[in-house]
Image 1 (cartoon, helix red, strand yellow):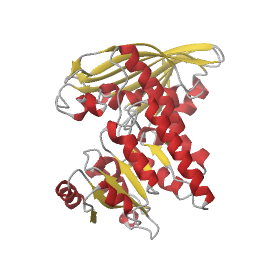
Image 2 (cartoon, rainbow, N blue to C red; image 1 turned 90 degrees about the horizontal axis):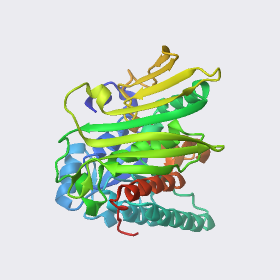
Image 3 (tube, rainbow, N blue to C red; image 1 turned 60 degrees about the horizontal axis):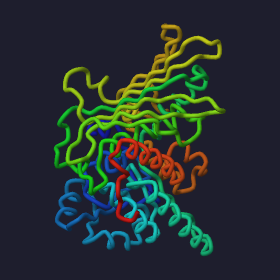
Length: 388
């Protein structure tokens, strides 16, 4: 992330008086890249405080990242009236519980993906959000916002892929999504391999494949595809290191299969640019010609990605997609996510527009339903949370 902050104009780093004040629940490794660094790239957001499992851990994290406030507990942070929004980067098993506590404290919530350990927890969370906002409405208070942190969808690349699919591949006949990390990138003791914390490669990495297929590759299809099959690709601590699964999308009676592969057990050899994340859609254009769209590094497209379309074997599209405000292609998808989140909370964009680029609870439930289906089909069983 150092390269990203280095190219940001100094005036962008000055904070507006009404910058949204964030508190972070947990000194997690993802927080610097997902929120702290992006907050240095905008005048509209500020990291005000941190709470962790212990004050010592929070103090060390705050010192490292220049966070002004440290709290003795999560409860103390949530009680601070200066904190307007909460970022939740804790283990998946804790997401729902912490999100509910944050909402009850009157905070907006940006929660790491997946939003909950299972679909039932997501439904409980939706019910809680609706009840809290109904009460706030009677008191003439603005609604609270809850979004799942699928930063990939906030990057303009996702919107461009949707547009190109509509224009060039109106008839889809198949799709492939592949997310692979090198072997031993994560230790066996990592929380990703802890079943009690709702771990698993499909939870941590496969949720992207499902969301991207649903929201981007098959955006015009039914929102909850059928899980055709699922097979674990190795286990660590009885938790999936990888998973192969098939999804069936339907539109107007037409069914199309999407094959997905997720793995934390990839090879070291080969180009990392080709290894990590990949999505491909095949079909036909309006003239009935064979057409294929391919996007590489779709999860974190800044600073590198490729987007191509081939028609009858000839490349007709070869693009790099960044936003109008981007600086040398370095603004990460996390920046775009934060920007959409802040504008949504401040009422600068409609809920309809915000939901094109962010992930609201209704869509999170759909994604969790598919995740549950994959784990059920694999024989590993649905992940367990702390509230459902």
